[in-house]
Image 1 (spheres, helix red, strand yellow):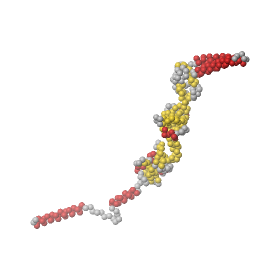
Image 2 (cartoon, rainbow, N blue to C red):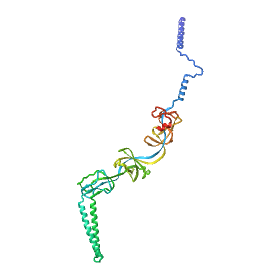
Image 3 (cartoon, rainbow, N blue to C red):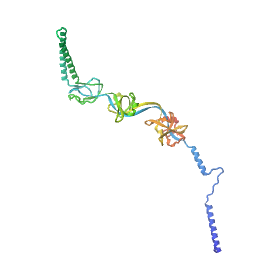
Image 4 (cartoon, helix red, strand yellow):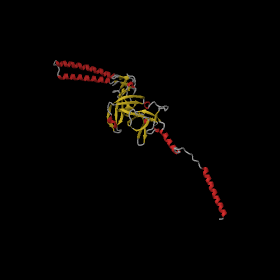
Length: 386
C-alpha cells in the first residue's frame, strides 16, 4: 500500500477513537460526594424500614372477658302434649237422649251427670223390683217366725231366705240398668264438643263427647338408647311450644318405658307438666330440653373469639399487658353463640373478639369500643360490655 494511503487510514482511526472517548465522558453521571460516616442509600432504606416496624402502631381490637357460669348438659327432642286423663263418653245401652246437662268446653266435676237417656222402662223395672223385694221380705219374716215356733221346717225357712236374696239381686239389677241411662264424668275436667242432640237415638258404643283433664299435662318424647344410662325419673325438662313463643315451661320425668323400640333404637319417656292458666292444650307440638347434669364454674366466651387453624385446631388471642398472646383452646358444649372452654383459658381472661385477622402473636393491641369510634376505658370494661 502506498505511503499516502496508509497515512489516511491511520488518521481516520485516531479520529474515531477520539469521538468514542468524548461520548463516554459526556454521558457519564457524576458521583455525588457523601459525608463521612454516612451509609449508602440502599443501607439507609433497610434501616428505616426496621425502625418503622419497631415503632408500629397498636392494632385496634374488640375484647370480651371470659366469664364463669353454671352449665347444664342436656339433650333436645320433640314431643307431644297429652291430657293427664282423657276419655270419650259412650253409652253402654241403646236409647234416646233425654237431656244434656253440660256446656260445651266448660268444666265439670267428678261424678256429675252429663247426659241422660230416656229411662222410662228402667224406672218401671225398678218399681217392679221394689215390690217383689217387699213381698219377699214379708214372706221371709212370717216364715222365720213360724220356724222359731216349730211350725215350719228348715227347708221352708231356707226357701224363703233364698227368695229374699233373689228379690234383692233383681232390685240391684234394675237399679244398675237405671244408672246406665245416666252418663257421669269419671273425673274432673273439661268437656269437648258434643256430637249429639236431645232426641237423638244412640246405640251402644256411639261417641257422644270427650272429657279431658288438662290441669296437668303429659309430655311423651323419645331419646336414643345411648342416653338410657343417664336418664331417671325426677329429672327436669324445659318445654317450649311454637304456639306460645318465648315461653318456657318446667316439667319432670314421670316414667321411662322399660321397652326400647327395636326399630328406631329409642326409649319412650313421659313427663308431667302443670298447666297453669290452661294455656297449653293436648295434641300440641312440644320442644323438649332434658337437663342431664349441672356443672358449676365453667369458662364461657362468645364463639366469635375462636379462630380455626389447619389440623382441626382452635385458638384465641388473649390480651396480656397490651399485647396479643395466641392461646390454643379446647371447647365443649355450645349454647347459641356462647361456647364452653374446656382447656386454655380461665374466668377473667380478656380475649379478642374482633380484629384477629390483623394480629400475630406478640403484636401490640389497643382495645376499642364495639362501634370502633373510640378507645375503651380498659380491657376489663370492654369485656364486660361484650
